[in-house]
Amino acid sequence: MLEHKIPVELPAGYIDFFKNLESWQNEEMIKLRKTYQPEKKDILKALNDQRKPFVIQLNPHIEVDAFKDVLTRLLDFLKDRRPEVQDKLMLIAKQLDKLDYEDIIRSFLQGKYSNIEEIAARHDLPVELFFFVIDHAMRPFLRLFAEPYTKELVSDNFYWDFPATCPVCGSKSHFSRLRTETGQRFMFCDRCFSEWKVRYIFCIHCGHDRPGDITFMTVENDDAYRLYVCDKCKGYLKTYDERPGGETTDLFIANIETIYLDLLAKEKGFTNHEQ
Ligand SMILES: [Zn+2]
Ligand SMILES: [Zn+2]
Image (cartoon, rainbow, N blue to C red; front, top):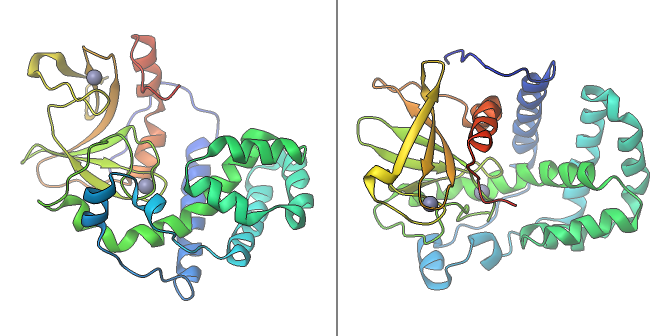
């Protein structure tokens, strides 16, 4: 993996924290794989018929007890790695037996994130941190759920109207990978690790595709990371451009490492249309 120069100061240990979190999630996936094996269904047909993220159409059957176990271990992991938020983590840990996990799991999968915030507020918990732990405890399940569909999402029969939304888990994506030789672009979901095909000269936000209006910029001669911007809706998309010869990278970490591109985009008046 190439080392990329980061033109902005990130807090000390910031990237290492996310690398460790990803490793922890990989270990949880290995444990869960023995008990969590959602049945494989016809995703292409489901996406065509209903035009909604697969997880909303199909209940992925995440067991309350299994989720609570992962959440408990995540809090322990965070207590070690983020001692500065220890007190807030303790507040959450104390409420673990009182939470309505059915409601939390359902709300999260359906994308009803304000419900998660309301649950936090009802239990007097720090809202942002609570959302973070629910999100990250859910990811090992979502990644296992998404795993069987890797090939379908990049196949010729894949068709999806909402390029910025993950067709599997419904999460928003602002990061893509570009295969240089073919010009094929794949969106990446950092929640479930799905990748899906989108067109190259094309704005994932508004669908605009006039070549001169979709341009890209790079920072400090680093050609691998590009910021694609759309003149029409002022939307941006971060992109990792694979070098000829096939340099691979960890897209989850690449997305975090390129926070400077988000800052640059916003500074120049572009948006990811999140807010
Ligand atoms: Zn996803
Ligand atoms: Zn656009």
